[in-house]
Structures are given as structure tokens and as C-alpha cells.
Length: 246
Length: 47
Image (cartoon, helix red, strand yellow):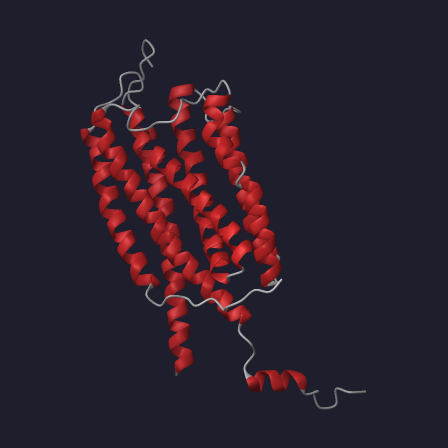
């Protein structure tokens, strides 16, 4: 297997990421303000339902980012370009962060509505499996030093872990779940759609900013790992040390 | 809860929003610090 082209980090990446994050902060501030103070309380859940305006956008974006990881894994295995490995690392890390937040938000919402912090319901269980599967891929990347083996093994592991993404999405339809079915603008009252949409774009832009920054860092590290040694260092490495030969 | 309707619960709402935005801010801050560190290393290497 031959892998071509050293990764070339885009020097404008931090600027692009800053723009995306700035837009996301404005959107999240507006969306959360409307969701917390202007949207009406839900008939049965009351004010607790306001958690939806942050929980559902986190869920959508987490699933999307982990699908991006799957696409990057396929792209690396087929194209052998290092930039896909950098994007893979970034998307797994951001996806895991969002998936963990999703579990925490869900748990906080579950306590007042279901009476328990956690239940081994199909949706919750499959989401927990998703978190641990991708955490495993991150651990694998941490422990493998050879860049080529790390990239190939983690791409294969990502493809296996990503098989859980459609299971998470469909779990509420396939099994008798305590969790409600998917929330979409069609299933939510129109007065609740605006904050949901604004926060969805806010979290999406934030995740995009994080992805750009994190992949930039990964590309820089890869460029350092894969760059040939400087001539004087290579020479010093080859020459035997004085008195070293016996 | 009264008659199947949940009353109150703002503490759960604040906890969910607070934890979410705190975690996202900490992660974003850690990325910004790493980027700044890399930029500082580049400048030192140029000198």
C-alpha cells in the first residue's frame, strides 16, 4: 500500500474556523434565548421540554459528524490521501464529544420525565454503544504510532463503528422504545420550530468550525511525522558515535 | 408532577444548557490554545 502526498495544512484554516464559530455563537445565543424565554411550554412536560432546543440539534449534528467520519474512512481507504486521515481524526473526536453531550442531556431530560437518569432502552443503549465504539477508535489511534497502520486500522474500525449510526436513528421505530420518535419540524408545533432550527444551524456551524480547527492540527502533526529527516540530522543519525563500536 | 403534567423543572433545563455550553466552550478553548501553541512554535523556528 502506498500513500501519496504529504498533508498540506491550509494556513487560513484558523480564520475560517473563527468565522464559523462566531456565526454559531450568535445563532446559539438567539436560538437559546427564544427557546428558553419566548417559546411556549409543552402541554405535558412543561418547561422541561425546553431541553429539546439543545438536545435535538446536538443529536442531529452528532449523527451527521459521525457519518462524515464514515465518509472520510472510505475516502482514505480508496484514495490513500493523508488529508482524509486528518479529517477522520477530527470528525471522530467532534462526533464523540457531541454524542457524549447527547447522552448527558438525555439523562438530564429523563430524570423529570421518566423518573430515572438512565434506562436500558433501545435508543439509549444504541447511543451508548455508539459513544464507546468511537471512543475505542480514538484509543486505537492513540496507541498506534506508525501513521500508515494508524490510518488504515482506524478507517476500518470507523466503518465498523458507523454501522451503529442507522441503528441509533431507527431504534425508536424498530423496537418498543421509551424514547419518543424522531423530532422534526413536521412533528413539532410551529411556535417551537424557530428556536429548534436556529440552534440546529448554530450547533452545525460550531461543529464545522471545530472540524476545520481539529483537522488543521491533525494535518500539521501528520506533516511533522511524515516529513523526511533534515540532511544534517539524518547524517548524525547514520554516523557511529565515538567509541561506540566495540 | 401533578395529574401527569410536569411542573417546574427549570433546574434540569439550566443544567442541560449549562453543561452543554461549558463542554463546548472548554473543547473550543483547548483547540484555540493548541493552534496558538503551534503558531508560537512556527515563529520560534523561523528565528
